Image (cartoon, rainbow, N blue to C red):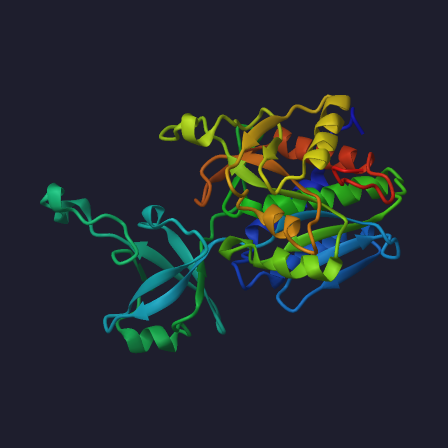
Length: 363
């Protein structure tokens, strides 16, 4: 395992297909189907819930339960208002960035299929008074689908409440940088699936039940994890998400800390992160020569770690993050070596967890 390349052609093809599929918050199920189909050979059974969270389970009868988790949803927009002239105004579904919207293509999801559109913006020639220029804001950005009026928009199947995603697809930049929208956090679902694949291929017999959990609705408040943790009732949870590469322009490292893609997984420090579990992860990294970085949060991690940690009377939880550039844009970027090392770190940590292991500070 240490000396093998973690990712192969099949896994990268899955990652590309999984990233390219739209799975906005509240509409994750098609992406979950792709994920479950890939994971199927490596697990014993699946658990699903009414809102779309999917869990692949290894050793479902084992009393001691360990979760490894990512989240499946991506940020998006909702149609909020249609003008008489057929232009569309939007509201957020998650943390969509209004500043990147102008001149972007969009896919509007309707009962009749995808309707294409663009975020329009007035030409620079018409913006004469630069001191009074409108900036991209929620009340200034709008979508044009080429309709002459509101009636034609509705005839095309677009109505208030339709969800809107960006169509930007998977690219490899300079051989080892993966670029796409929705790497936050489709990468998490991908990495935990790869952990399951490696366990199967290496004939690892775990002494506990492993719950490979792909939660929904993280982008609007950790809601999927909040629901599924009460279904699983885990003893331990290791969550993976993305964090910021803070080495690009306009990021203040004194505030955000120093983390950089290509320098390894990021291990978090926060009240929700259980210290003994984090030490086990760090020990696994050191024992297997896996590079890692550290990041300190304040009151919360802002990830599904918080939902697992504060559920069921307190679940020992930890967070391993993937450094990412340009979060919540359509060109999110990660380093292939970091993806591989997050997978390695979760895998090696699982090998050290004992059946019935306690993380209680007083034992």
